[in-house]
Amino acid sequence: MIVFRDPAEVPVGFGPSVVAIGKFDGVHTGHRAVIDRARIEAADGAQVVAVTFDRNPLSVLRPDRCPPDVIGPHQKLELLERAGVDATLLLTFDATLAALPADEFVRRVLVEALSARTVLVGRDFRFGAGGVGDPALLERMGVDHGFRVDVVDDVRAVHADRRVSSTWIREALAAGDIATASRLLGRAPSVWGEVVHGLKRGRELGYPTANLSPDLEGFVPADGVYAGWLIDIEGARRISYPAAISIGTNPTFDDVDSRQVEVYVLDETDLDLYGHHVEVRFVERIRPMTAFDGVDALLVQMADDVERVRAILR
Image (tube, rainbow, N blue to C red; front, side, top):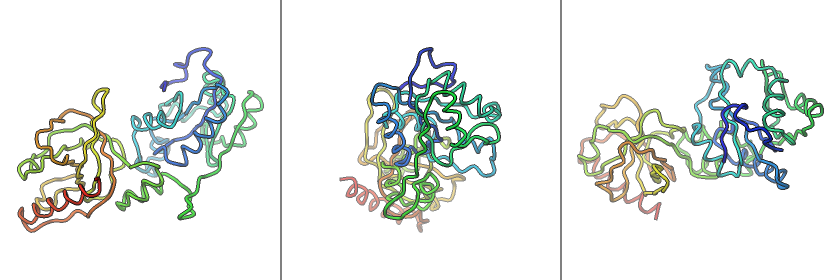
């Protein structure tokens, strides 16, 4: 997949293209339904292009109302590529872009840069300074500029009769409900980050952990212990390891100020991942975070956790 970060980077003669526009936070099943529709529309040889942003526009327009991201920009690009997008225009959403008039956005991005033939948006799509642009305005502009607008209906979950959304996914993850989040995403939820040095208490207890940097990408689920996978994404070859994942502040010792993601790779005691970038995928929550009455009780529980994780991932 080609990645452009500014319309000026798109080469002359690029296109024609079928463009899907949106935040794509999560690249969930609803987003992929839009991308699949774009791929069908582009089956005659047009480029499938996602136009999206490096951050939630609310972080600039209304930071007090901006929710945490389900995924970060690097995750988003990989997931869009997996979904079959040929190129992504990842726009920097700042004050300059927020002030761009709707007609200028259409002319610069959709017409001049991407030679859009069809543009797909959701019914709640807004664009241009002050959010004055909506699908109806985009359709009128399409008549003038020679592209068609396809307004895509929401995807609804059959089991709950609710619109699939990033909001719902955040709710599920905040409750530790990995099963629901996985159904909505169409994959296991995950976080990405760099492995950094911690207090090394896990090593002292016989369960050495890879600690993720606090500035990781992705929505961290509720505190607790999870079965999952650690994927070493450093270099061209990716290696997956079965893992027990701990999220929280180590209440038994009560000496950690902020939530941590710590990953114990099953049956590995000498694995050196410091400085590596990894993906941690969550499969199932096995218990909430608990303060234990001493190290001995904690060790008994950790041994049980590992066996439960092993059984789940088997």
